[in-house]
Image 1: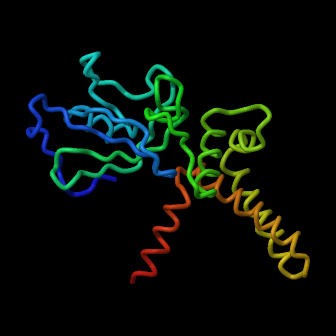
Image 2: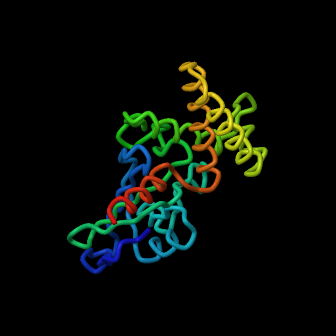
Length: 202
């Protein structure tokens, strides 16, 4: 979560270093804030991104009023040890204007799987009565895991036949429910890919 390089707060006269926040799934830059040692410590301890607000002159956890928290995934220190890169999962829009980012960019990725993961996260954090995904999350981890098992069996059954449409549809159902299960466990597909990459590099 936090690379071995340590940030040097003493390089900044006010003890505040820039903290660039990036969506860990879409890789879009979401916002820029400032952190002191206390803000960094609180972020690492609670898993929600916290800044030092220059206007409020106090620690400020992003989302403490709106509920649009930034869930910490990773922190990296730059080559000069005076800037932080925060990778996080946003629970809704980030900018106070209502925009996805502070640069008025839509927080989506050209990678459809990443976009789908973002939608799944939103359905979990902002439940909707009409959303199948929200209802699935509400039923809990056991039901989600059960659905993955059921869809896996369907894929196996269709693999034995020659109906391409049915096989691909069941495969899509399996992948979707697997992404929901990963999200429910607090992971993303990138975490699984990292394991595969590590195995491949051995």
